[in-house]
Image 1 (cartoon, rainbow, N blue to C red):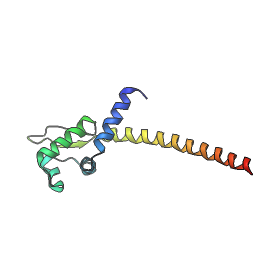
Image 2 (cartoon, rainbow, N blue to C red):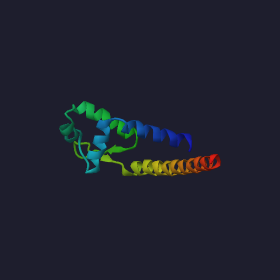
Image 3 (cartoon, rainbow, N blue to C red):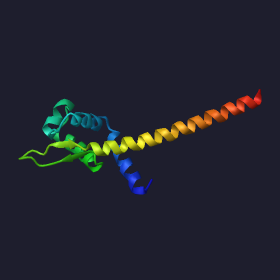
Image 4 (cartoon, one colour):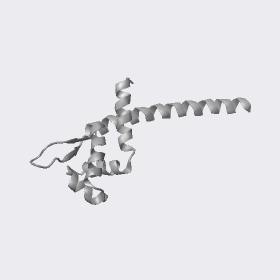
Length: 113
């Protein structure tokens, strides 16, 4: 993995390390929302939600566009797909390593008998 890809993943995981940002991503999965709409279920100020959105934007998880006077936020699903693909590739590697270790331990146990 190249350093740029590693930094993108690190930024994404850092953004998703906060429960409020995870909840915002979950909310945006249901459709676009303005800062005002996002403040309602979170009991946070619009400034606090804006800061969370900025972190999510920098991680590429959210984009914002101007629509009349509002700036609704949209979930960038492609970034989540990239992260899930990386997790899946790691999961396969971890399973392979676990299986090799298990086979090795069985061989060792068989040699002791």
